Amino acid sequence: MKPVQVYLAYVLLSACMCGILSEEDTETIQEDKGVLVLTESNFDRAVEQYSQLLVHFYAPLSRDSLGAILEFADAARVLKEAGSDVILGGVDVTKQKDLAETLNVTAVPSLRLYLSGDKYKPVYCPVLRSSTSIITWLKRRTGPSADLISDLRQLETFTAEEDLVILGLFKDVEEGVAKVFYDVAAEVADLPFGVTGSKEVFSKYDITQDSVLLLRKSKTAEKFEMTSTTLKDDVIQFIRIHEMPLVTEYNGKTSSKILNSVVQNHLILFIDKTEKEFRQIHRAFRNTAKKFRGTVLFVLLDTAEHRNGRIMEYFRVSKEDAPLVLMVNLTTNFKYQLPSDLLDIQTFTDFCESYLQGNAKLKLQSEPIPDDWEEHPVKELVGLNFERVTFNNNMNVLVLFYAPWSPECRALFPLWEELAEHFSDSEDVVIARIDITANDVNLRMVDRYPVIKMFPAVYAERVVPYNGERKLDPIVEFVNAEKERAKVDKAEEDRDRKKYLDAQKAADKDEL
Image (cartoon, rainbow, N blue to C red):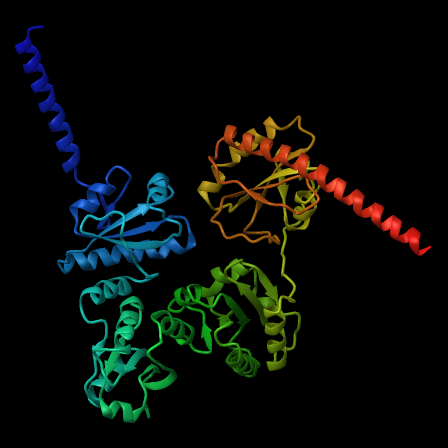
């Protein structure tokens, strides 16, 4: 080929490549209900294209994400109708795992605001569960975060808007601790905030120091005095602990606040509100709540309300079981049942103290043990046989913890059959699974299902999580590696046990 022809070919090829790249760069990012569908291939382009990009990272099948997805889409609609410069995008972390890892997304659902094309320094948003709070948070970032209350008439209008409002009373509403209050208001977007320096308002509530009031139906519910050492997190903690009444009834409006409370210990009273003993039990329950404010959240669940059927099913409580009291730890998901039919202040108090001291007994439920559970290649475990099988020092047990309604969990069933087939000739390897929605186990389970854990053949009750690829070869390699490690560790345990027994024998001999 002649030099001129080579040159022309190169130019034409370059033009074609530029056209292809240009087309890729300008390709429209798909939307779903007004929310950009962000992927690894278009994320950088979206961040560069939009000066304010609020991104929702979610897992569509997780309990927390389901409601958040709908609220986020509603916020996108409202912002678009208002002509806002803020664009909303979503990342499904179950499909975009590499992107989530690159961005260090460790919790879902979560929100991040990317500004001016900066991918690596987003603004981390607080947990916002409603479209209103999302929009409020965005507005408070650029405008005033609290309404200025000048007189009693404005105060009356402000307190009438919501059942609960937050009012800051400061001698100087622009400087000093007032600035901390404004930072709090910007972050706590789900509650209305007002600020005042009015002497009339100070006098009305008998306030002399810079303070934050929680006003419930215009009356003072709680007071927090601020000083020069007060931090933003101190005020947020105070608000989050006291924003709910002493006893909060579970319903559609309160469910989100209950589940996202900073207080992780929940004492739940399951009771029919139409029963004649309800008032007496409720009074005792409420009076007990005063003592444990900030450490235990007291929740009432009306078993006569048909809309509570789903949550009762989750806790495996029937109408016939009521009245019944459960302590639930939201961090571990462990449940503890009040072991008494007597429901009075002393019983509630003793139970809470026993739990907080670590003396309460776990409430573990189980399906019946299947007659043929050992006959299948994959062993089907239930609560009653779980510990006997998994904490067996002669067996290496790999367990799939699954939720039967989850497609992601069910997709692993064929793989588990393959694993059982692969290890069918191994006398010391068991492949098992357990429906974790129907069986309680005495393990801390904080991961979203499916969860895979290995229980090695050692005397110590060791549990090893598996976080690798959900494919045959990597899991086989993991099991074999843990199996070999268990052999070494168990041999050492045997030596230690022998030393201990020999020492005991020698001590007994000396006594004789």
